[in-house]
Length: 121
Image 1 (tube, rainbow, N blue to C red):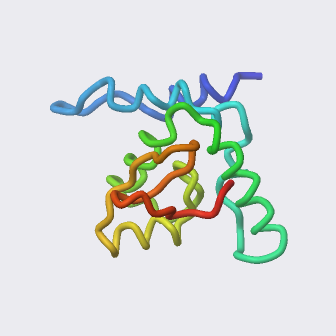
Image 2: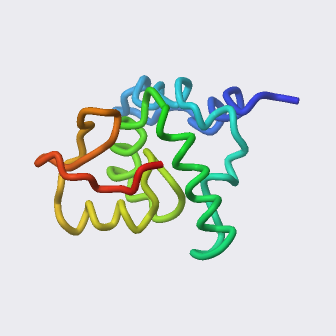
């Protein structure tokens, strides 16, 4: 069976002319590459889906490329799933409020004022 890290490399595809070929390299360091991708795309918003979302966020909590993932999700307007430790509703709030996300002390995440933007994973 092929590892998820290898599968992720195939999903990146060949860069289009003018695209940075190294832009998606952060994916190879992502903790989520060792998990079933379905974990990060819960169906629903209550019960088991909430538990699944929290489990996905806990994987993101220790990810060395969490910020790159979140920036990519925001720049490509991902509307589903957990990316960079935030679910689609949290990312939408960031987009609507026009806030920039940055890590704050203690490994948690906050906006440019250091205010938390997501529940702890």
